[in-house]
Amino acid sequence: MKVRNACRPLLRWSAVLSAAAVLAVSTGTPSSVQAASRAEAAQPKIVQAIADTYPLALDDQGNVWGKALRSISVKDGFHRSLLMKGKGLDRVRSIAYGKGNIVALREDGTLWTVEKEDPAITKELFHVSLGDQVPGLHGIEKVILNGALGLAVDQEGKVWTFESVSRKYRNSPGDSYYLKAEQLKGLDSIEDLAFGTTGLSFLREDGTVWVIEYPKSQYGFTLDKHAIRSTAPKPMKELKDIVKVDTDTALTKDGTVWVWGTGVLATKQKNSIDTVVSPYQLPSLSEVADFDNGGKHALFVKKDGSVWGLGYFILKMDALGGKHPEEWKDLSPVEGLSDIVSVSVSDDPVGVGVDAAVKKDGTMSMWGITDNHTFYPKPLQVDFRTN
Image 1 (cartoon, rainbow, N blue to C red):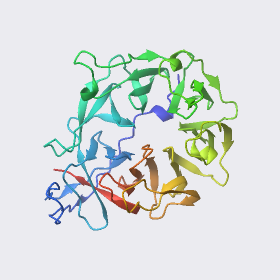
Image 2 (cartoon, rainbow, N blue to C red; image 1 turned 45 degrees about the horizontal axis):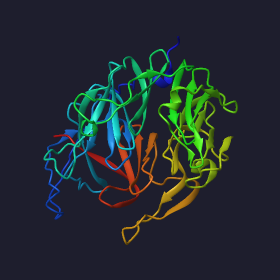
Image 3 (cartoon, rainbow, N blue to C red; image 1 turned 120 degrees about the horizontal axis):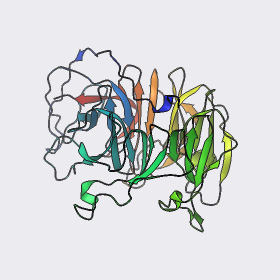
Image 4 (tube, rainbow, N blue to C red; image 1 turned 60 degrees about the vertical axis):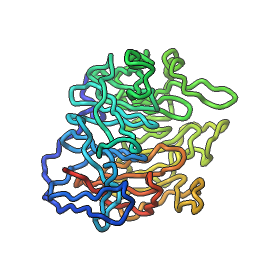
């Protein structure tokens, strides 16, 4: 079996960043925010970012970083959110996030839960730490999450389902996981996979995409964790020469993008139930190298390093603390970004709306509405607490 490019471990970048002066001083903010006085230290080089209420990042040394609790960055021109190295989260190849749950894929091919500290009660400064190994899974190269339900691809291209929850949500110490790891039948040579609005999509080595459809009722399509194990995959005949899939979205080898399902990119409707769209190519979009579809909107990285957005965006905060208004935006460039290699869009359907981007030099930027209800309309570089 040939080596699958999409499942290779993240490349270790050998360049070391120059030491940067990092200061965080008292700013008159509430006492719950500590001033962080830090010595000069080399900042990490980020290779993967996860945009969410509490953002995550993975560096080129295999360390996972989460939001520093009770600390902020006051560097001029930087995002106020400050990231800090997680406890025990080293030798990590990639991280996966889905509706509150996190797992880490380590370099040895094992999967581990990532535990989150409760900011309201913890005395720790770090937000994330290494949890427990997910049983029954070895030799894993790719993983995705939708809440507690996970899908993993092993070295042979086989797909496994599993369920993983943090310690605080388990019924008892002996009841570690609700759904044991089990192989999905009828799938092999899989390189990429994604949860969607109408089904699970699987990208094979030959560039074709197959789907396991969700059961449908009068209330729409439902992701049934038991039904997907007994449903045979079907080919999506419209899709060929695909190199990446995400939520109802596929990227072709020539840099074009296709969408389908009931999501907003395909229908321009929110919470659509009856409108199911067959795959079609997004017009006026080409030369795409990477993308992320968060459900409400998507970001596309072009081969020239620019970033383009499409979908519903929060352009301002609600002054009275209600639901923030969202507006549809046709395909347009995101100002203030260049030399970008990857992007991440929050999958939170309400409240926080955070986007993130990683540059070629390993720096990370974020924008949108954060957990403390601060609105950043334009991307700002993220700072890291290194001690």
